[in-house]
Amino acid sequence: MAKKQFKTESKRILDLMINSIYTNKDIFLRELISNASDAIDKLAFISLTDDSLGLSRSDFEIRVDIDKENRILTISDNGIGMDRSELESNLGTIAKSGTKQFKDELEKDDDQKLLDVIGQFGVGFYSAFMVSDHVIVISKKYNEEHANQWESFGNDGYTIKEAERDSVGTDVILHIRSNSEEGDEFDKYLEDYTISSLIRKYSDYIRYPIKMMMEHSRKNENKEDGGDEWETYLEEETVNSMVPIWQRNKKDVDQEEYDEFYKNKFFDFEKPIATVTVNAEGLISYKALLFIPGRAPYDYYTREYEKGLQLYSNGVMIMEKCADLIPDYYSFVKGVVDTPDVSLNISREMLQHTRQLTTIRNNIEKRITNELQRIQEEDRETYKKFWDAFATQIKYSIVDNYGANKDKLADLLMFATTHESGFATLKEYTDRMKDDQKYIYYAAGENFDRITKLPQVERIMDKEYEILVLTDEVDEFVIKMLDQFNEHSFKSVDDEDAIETTEDEKEKFEKTVSESEDLMKYIKNKLEGKVSDVRVSKILRSHSVCLTSEGPVSIEMEKYMAKRNSGVPGFSTEKVLEINPDSDVFSALSERFANEEYDLLDKYIELLYGQALLIAELPLEDPSAYSDLICSLMK
Image 1 (tube, one colour):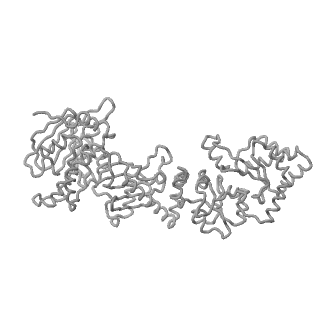
Image 2: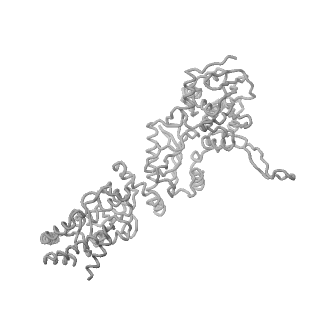
Image 3: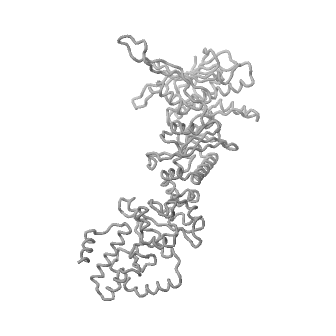
């Protein structure tokens, strides 16, 4: 029997199939089972019009058998089979797809677009050579009397001869390679646990039962003296579940089933806070089952975390984590997408970046946003749980890419607030603004209590204006990036013009500034290098002193950058020492300056500067010297 050579530069292309196209050896089983499913699809379609077959859907199956002793793994189907010419054409010519040809023939008739198959490129079969060094295919085609056998040891060619097979269908027989010295492990493909796990991972939703003999243990009830207490036995099992939960009618699935699917599929012990189902039909058809978790995975805020939804096509898992189906800011979402309308690359391991993929992603994004807003409005307690887990992700996503996504995410934001509700969305804040209120006020700091006791907060509270209390390090960056919401600008409590003043108040203030100009210059000179300016304060009420900043960088921003850079500021603020002109402290400073009591005045200045640092929660430059200063003033 003469050996035939593969067409299309067989050695080079087969080597490419094995070593380049497929990055994961486990994929071979998915490909062979997909081919078996395609073959059954063809015969099932023919059986609709050929009553002589006497076949129903329940008659079709795929079998996987393991012969561990002889290192043989067999994948069998009772599908349409192949004749001699098709074995030569489909297996002897790499990248020749009989499935695609069959599908093209069907689609010539608009009424026959009933079959959806995945084999587009005709290369999946050759992935078998990644794990085997000898492949035999025995196939008997529908309406043929004889079977034929195709056999190959790899890129040196193949042979075809007549063979025996009782019924229509195909057996793919793999002689599994031995473990290599380079560390490639092949023995695992002869273990029923490994094979069944791969079936459940990649082919769980193939529409036909995949059956195999599974080894089990049971207690030996007829144990004789000295015999084993436990015995092993083989039992045939259907490994795959066939009908995925997202393909079932939504009204036939209760929430408990969705919750259990989520916990088992995505390894979470808590149920999700929301489940989103999508059934899109049209130019692009897909089904999606999405889950919003109630807690962040342990590695979520690390570089090791990988986002992505599971992508299926016709029951076959194409990618375990398809990052292109979900935007970064919703990377916490888990779920599956099943569609026949995406373009796969030749190995079906990666997607081509297509318009269809972008459309699915955009639709999924909108559905998630709508669901989060619904929860926010209807179930605040649940939304608070979500916010506790993923607020950081949403906030950083607003700041990222120069605020490219801020308009999409602004409505999801929540902040602590001085309002009795405790927390507020920006819409809730603006909806209840007072008639005379122009700005959305905010104050930043370490925690709620400290922020609400800041000297500069007092004048806003006196007006009974609500203040957003920013306690997360990124909060102020978010506010700066948003700039405004619902046509209202954000205003820091530190800003001089945060509250409008009357003409009389302006006149009185300007007079005080003029009269104390020399004193402010003196204090500024004494604090040279520590502050950029010293001024009579417009923002203080009962408190004597505080530190504010000029320019876009606030004191809280400086702290944040210093923390990220291990204590070294990424940039410094232009700090301003503000002194309340109505305080006793201001009077004391003015009196010492007028009487030229400069030694005592200098001590007062150092004391006030230290107090301002403490109020702003900034470190004292020399705590010991500051303590000595206080003691010296107590003499």
